[in-house]
Structure formats: C-alpha cells, structure tokens
Image (tube, rainbow, N blue to C red; front, side, top):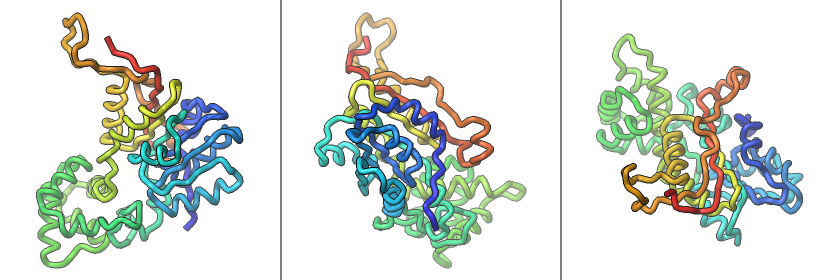
Length: 314
C-alpha cells in the first residue's frame, strides 16, 4: 500500500513555524512527509530539515517523496530522543520543531499493522516493527489490574473493569489473536443497549499508546525541544486526543513560567523561570471545510510555543 499522508492544518502549521530560509528545523514525526515537504520548500540550500520517525516504512516513503531535496536528513528514531539525536549530529541549536502526534492514515489503513478495529488483522499495533512488545502481548499477558489501568488512563473507558475482566476470562480458554477477537470480547463486555463502537475506539487507542509508549516521554521531548531552540524559534504540536493535549498544554504552561508561590508573596521563592511564550492561549482547530474534507482532522488541536530568552517569572 502507498504511504499516503494528508497533512492536517498544513497552512496553520507552516504559518506558525515562522520558517527562516537558512534555519534548522525538525519534523519529529515525519510520517509520509506531508508537513516536511512544505517545510523544506521554504528553506534555502543553506537551511536544513531533520526528519525523525520510528516507522522505517514512513522514512522510506518520505525519502522517496523528498528525493529532489538535498538538505534533508532522515533519522530512524523517536522524538523523545531529540536532544541526543541532534547532539550526535553536532547540532546544538535549532529554529523550530513540529510534532504531529496522530497515527498516520497509512498505519490505520494498512490492515496488517492491526491499528484499526474495522479491519481483520493480527494484534500488532507497533509503529516500530523492530520492537518486541505487541498488542497481542499486552492483551494476553498483562494482569487484570494493569489492563484496567491502561484502559482507564489511556482510553478513558467507562467499562475498563468489565472489559479487562472479560479479556482475562476469554484468554484462559483461548488466546486473543486478532483485532476481531478483541472486538468480540469488548462487545460482550458492554451492557445491552450501549453502542460498542466508542469502546472499540477507546480500547484500541489505549493499547496502541501502551505498545508504543506514546505518552511516556512526551513531556521530556517538549522540555528538551524548547531547551535547544534559538530565541524566536517555534514549537508546533498537533494532538488528537485529550491525554496528549493535556500534557502539551501543561508543558507549555510550565515552560512559559508557572510560578507556584502564593500571590501575596512579594518575591518568587519557587525559582520559576520563563523560557518563552504561548502563542495561542486556546488551541487552533481545523476549519469546518477541512473537517468535512478530512474527517480524521476533527479531533486535532494545534498548540504553539515561542522560545525567548530565559528569565525569572517575577
């Protein structure tokens, strides 16, 4: 299957990155290079785009899509290792970062990857096919308590306990091997009269996040990214569910200088520092037209942070 990537809020992302032709930019979730292509087109020959992705198939597709550009570097890795990756390349400062935290259309549509509850496939859900942990292992080896926690924390699923209990019951008789097997278990756990589709979405999301460690080091990636940005550099992050968005919002608030001292204190004693400012107090969302043309954009939010000179908040 062709690795297609429909970049969400492309114009909004490019406008907010404030791209300098000679700058160094990082697309930490390169995917199919939809956003990357627009970024590199704004760069001169002296500019540089560094694309990072944990999915080797995505990098291969990006390399093919951007083969006419010589100022692109492709890195197989994780955006949470951003600082180490850049330092390993001899790069100490950059001018902008993009993180698109959504799962790609290719990964959803490619049945063999096991990301979609609508397609029959082995339980896999790995973005990096080289890693050992799969959705099958999560479903068939995790304890009832651990499954409950994952479903509730990462999926915000109201029936987490019922679904976890049913999984334990079913796998004692026979291992749960495919996406349809898992859907059958989820469906049998939902009270009569309730639509199971929303639970399918939440449970598959929760397992995918666990398999790929999507939220584990996101805050670290944001802090590291802000630290290595030049003054005036922009950090754009696209999120697709409330868990991601909450982490991004809080991390940006902390970086902007969140003093925890009581308001009646004459001076700050918590030593809070500001590293920049939040550009949009409320997240930017796709236009109505884009949501109609690309339904997968409906849950997307864009938050933007600008690096400034470090200073105490009070």
